[in-house]
Length: 420
Image 1 (cartoon, rainbow, N blue to C red):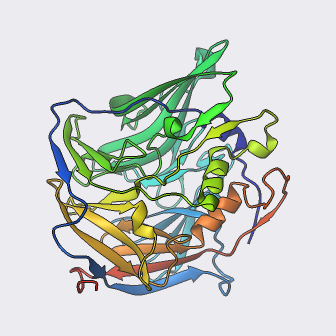
Image 2: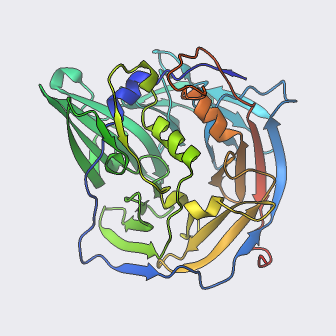
Image 3: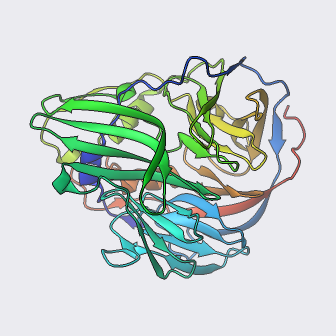
C-alpha cells in the first residue's frame, strides 16, 4: 500500500494550538475515588473470529487507514477510511456492500473526513473537520444534505472546526473548536457540546479557551491537550463521559442536559515514555513541521496519557484502556481494560485475547457483542500523516506502510476464566 504524505497540513496548522485551559466540574459533584486494584481478579475475554479482510493476500478489498468502526441495527459494519475519504460497508459475513461518501466539493462529498456516525434521522454523517460540517448520506450513499454548525463564516471573523461526533436516540454531540483571529493573536475555544440537525448549538459539557500570541513559538504538550479524540463518549442513555485531564486517571460524567453527575478516579501510576515514544509524540504534535520554516520549541511530557481510550457499554458500564493496559501484556493478550460500574466503582479488569500487537493494532467496539481489530493501524496512521521518514526534516513524496487487516470478532456474553 502506497501512502501519500498528509493533506491535512493546513488544517493541523490551524488546529494544533488550540487548548490550554483548566477543565473542572463544580465542587459539589459527587466523587468515587477508587484504589489501584479492582474488587475482582483479572478475567480473560474469549473472542471468536467471524471474518477478516485486507492483508497481503486480499486483492479485492482496498483499505487505506481505517480509523473508526461502527455498526447499525441491521447488522452492517461501517469502516471509516480517513485516507480514502469514505465509509466502507460490510455485511455480517464480511462481504463488501458499498462505499459512502467520496472526496470532492459536490453533494455527498467532502474534502477530508475525521469521523462518521449514524445520525438521529437515520442517515450516515461524515465529519469534515474544516470548514466544519457533517455531510449526510442515506444508507445507500445518496446525498441527504449537511449539518453546518454556526460560526464557520470567515467574513464574520471566526472559523468553526468539527473533530468528532456521536449520536444516540435524538441526541447529537460533537467536539470542535471556534477560532477567531486578532492582529497579534488568535483565540480558540475548544468544546464538547450538543448540536441540532439544523446546526443550532446546545449545551456545552466542557470548554477550554486558549489565547496564543503569534510570536510565541513554544508548544507545551500538557497545555495543548483537549479530549477531542478518544477522550469522550456518549452513553446509550444519553450521558456524556469525558476524560478531561491528560495526566490524571479521571472520568467526568454529565447528564443528557449537561448537569455534572459524577467524578470517577482511580489511584494510578503513570507510564514513563521511552525515548522512541517521546520522539514520536513530539512529531505528532506538529504534523507539518517539515514544511514549517520557523523554529518550534516543544515541551513534552515524560509520561503517556493515563487514559488512552474508553467506551460505554450497553449496560452503562465504562470500559477504560489505561496506558498500562498495553505494556508488558501476557503472551496472547492484546490489552487489559478497566471496567467501572454505573456508580463509578472499579469492578474488574478484562484481558482481550487475540493475535494482535497492542503497540500497533487498534481495538474498536462497533456495538453489540462485536470487537474489531485493525492490524497495522498505528503504522498506517503514522505514514498517512507524513511522518514515516527516518529523517523528520526530509521531504518525502511517498511513504510505505504494511497493508491493513481488519478482523471481526464476537465476544462471549459472559466473561471467561480468571487470568493467572
